[in-house]
Length: 324
Image (cartoon, rainbow, N blue to C red; front, side):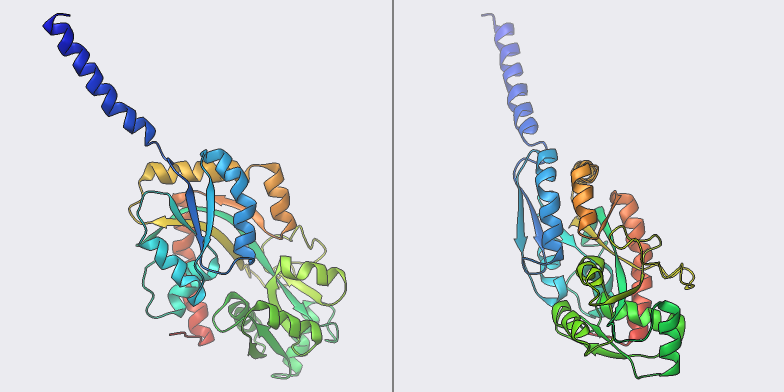
């Protein structure tokens, strides 16, 4: 082999050596870890498991679900905010973690949209306003009239101070001018159990939680908080239909990544999530869970969050809720 041919061969070998690792490093090149800031078995866990199988097919890598509960989801959020910004560690979060906690906790160890950036919104979930059957109101108008006639005689249960089940009734009170007494519980399950038992008269609870009990007549649904009727409770009118103009409040789920995650990784993740949510099977199962597939990519999800943050800050301020 001539000297020139040897040099060309060596150059090609060096180029191949440089190109091969780059090809191997195409995102994702290892399992993607989804962090949930709540214990296993909750709504976010169910949502993650619904997405996981199709998502790992779309990404070509396993999806690992990990739980870091505590502080209303803030511990999991901080963990992801401090993770390597390579797209392999993500946070699956709900309304509380993303837009309520920043107003509720004065000293969060991270800032949304600075330390955690949007990947995709995956679903929206309306709440149902329900009452115990002993409440003599067949619809929302009758309930409002009853509450106005008996200020302070009715109470409502919530999963705790500052959560969505506390803030939505406060928004409802402000929109209607009624007064109800707040009964905070340590979680959604005991709060809803007391509504079922008749110890609390009213609650704003997620549609999946209440649907079976509405069907059984154990609670009465007066309205849902979405702009359109819920597919799970199609016979229940929206609050807008019932006369509360522009009263639309929905919970939502979405994925966030550490700040500095490369745009190409965000785009790949968003594309895979959109593919997942386009699956008829995933959409049907999500609807059965009471959520509506509602994909938004990184930029659109960012705009959505920027609009939601001040709205929930006003709601928290009006409620007087504050956690340290």
